[in-house]
Image (cartoon, rainbow, N blue to C red; front, side, top):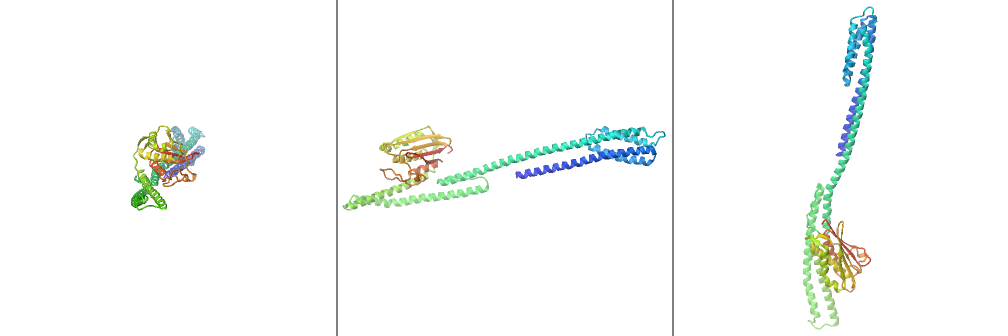
Amino acid sequence: MVPTVVSVQALLTLEKLATLGRGFAVQAVMLTEQSQRLSERTRTMERSARQFMVLDDVVFRDRYLVASKEAGTALKALTDALPMLAPGLSSEWMTHSAAAWSALKAGKQPGLREHPLVFQAFARLPAINEMLALEGKREIKRRNDGLLTELERQRGLLTAAVAGALVLAATLAAGFGFWLSRPLHRIETAIERFGENRFDQIVTVGGPADTRRLGQQLNWLRQRLADLDEGKERFLLHISHKMRTPLAALREGVALLEDEVAGPLTGGQREIGHILRQNTAALQAQIEDLLRYNAAAFDAQHLQRVKVDLVALLQRVVDEQRLQWQARELHVSVGGVPASAQVDANKLAVALANMLSNAVRFSPKGGNIAFIVGTGPDGQTIDCIDQGRGVAPEDAERIFQPFYQGRRQASGTCNGNGIGLSIVREYVAAHHGTVRLLASDVGAHFRIELPDDQ
C-alpha cells in the first residue's frame, strides 16, 4: 500500500512538472516571437512612413496602417504576458505610433522631407522595442527560476514522501510484527504448558484469523490432552488398587509361611520365602512410587503462590530431615544472600526435600552438603552441592526422567526408585523455573532457577 501511494505521488509530481515545463516553453516561444514580430512591424512602419513622405503614395500609407495594427497586436500580447512590465512603455509606444499616423494622414507637407512627429516616433519606438524584448527575456528568466524552484520543492516533497513512506513502512512492519508476536508468544507458551502436562489454562490467541483459528485448535487439543491425562490418572489408580489386593494377599501368605503356620520350613524353603518377601515389598514400593509421582505431577498444576523467604524455607527443610543426615554424620549448611520469591511454599519445600534426600543418599559418611541461595538479573537461584560420587556423563541427560536410575549408585544402600529428581523437575517447572545439573569435579552440583516474572 505504501509503495503504491509513493508511486502515485511521484507520477503526479512528474506530470505536474511536465505540465509546467510545457507551459514555460510555450510562453518563452510566444514572448520571443511577439518581440521579433513587434520589431519587424516597427521597421516596416518606419520604412512605409519614410516612403510615403518621399513619394506621397497612399499605398505606403496603407502599408503603414497594416503594419501598425499588426504591431499593436504583438504589443498587446507582450503586455498581457509580462505582468512586471511598466504600464508607461505600452502607452508611450501607442502614443508615438498614433502621432506618426496622424502626421501621415495629414499628407506630405511641401518643403519637409520628413515630418517632425514621424521622426520623433521612429527615433523612440526601436528603443521601446528593445526595452520590451529585454523585459521578455527577464520574464523568461523569472519563469525559468520559478520552474527550477518548483522542481526543487517537488524534489523535496518527493524525498520527504519517500522518507515518510520508509518510516511508515518500518512502523507498520514493527507494528505488524508486534501484532503477530503476541499471539505467537501465546501459542509458544501454550505448547510449553502442554509439554509440562499443564492443561488447566484456557488457550486464548488473538491476532489474525489464522492465529485465532490455531488458538481454537490448540484449545481443543488442550481439552483432549486433559481428558487423556485424567483417563491415565484413573487407570493408574484403578490398576494400582486392583494390584494392591492380591499383593497384600501375597505378602500375608509369605508372612504366614515364614511364621511356619503351615508347618516347619526347611532351609531352602525359608530362603524362597525370604526372596518372595523382598520382591513383594519391592513391588509394593514401586506401585506407591508410581502413585506418588502421578500425584505430584497433578499437584504441580495447582500452585498457591505466596512471598517466601528462600533461605528460611531451606533451613526448615534441612531441620525436618535432621535425623537422616545426622545419622550419616553429614554436615548440611544453608548460605548465600537473602532472597524471596512468589512460590508455592509446600511444593517447593517438597522439591528441596527431594534434592536433600538425594544428596544425603549419595554423600559419603562425614561429608558436606551445601545449599546456596543467589540472585541474578533473571531471578533467584538455589544450588545444591554434595561430595558424593556424582552423576556419570552418560546419565546427565536422563537423570530427571521418572524411574531412571543412574549407573553410579550409592554404596551400602538399596537402589532408589528414580522419582525424586523427577518430582523436583515437575514442581520447579510449575513455577516456570528450571533445574539442571552443572559440571563439578567432585560430587553433584544441581541448580534451581526461579524467574522473577512468574
